Image (cartoon, rainbow, N blue to C red):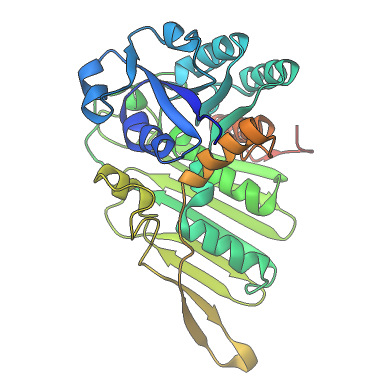
Length: 349
């Protein structure tokens, strides 16, 4: 059997502890070997055998490391990814890819010149409900989709003292949850023709955006992306209308709370979302509603595919070009919100 690829994980905050470390650990062809953190006791409580370095550059330069995973604050993504690529390491970056599309393109060129895999952790391509919706659309059960709403709402009225909620570049809800909903829409419908965005700070003592409402225009299709930190009521996750029917789904994918609770891929109920969506149709004018079982979510598939891309030459599951298109739309959304105008997009950059 081929030796597993040794991985260095930079940062051990929420993203690393909840997502990256357990998912990497679940893939046989990967080995979590080194972690960069200022809290070695926190790392060793979960992974006693890994080496811990306080300096991320020391972790990057470790001679046994083949892949570096960057799950540090957004402001450091570009510099650390660049350092890792220059050190000859394959790289995974947590979303958002970088702070700007220009930085993303620079990293993409560097990886290409160095013949290295560079990928971005858009894990919500493997949400149970998104996989289900993608299948429904591909099978034509909704006909031609004409209206698509994606809600990612939470109720967190109190501002927490953490970098994601401070007035920093790349902070706030648009750069936190926006990449998820944008990447999913790009996977379903491709590049939009127009963007109109409203991004705001609504909470008391809020510093960074905690609300976004964005409309993407396509030919005979409207896409609404909505996120807020002040929604206590259960909003639908997806609302989709097409020429043959509609689909409505409540509730978020269960993999994040399962990981928080200590669950892991391979557990009996891993990736199962019990909250079924409903498909509504009216054949011959007679309304019919049908509960739709969810596909099984599988965040680990991302890392399985990254490992296969590096070790076996398989396709990169999330290419840097795809992640850069998300960065482009994040920037256009900000520009639209500042100007209050709908912005026309000629073509994919």
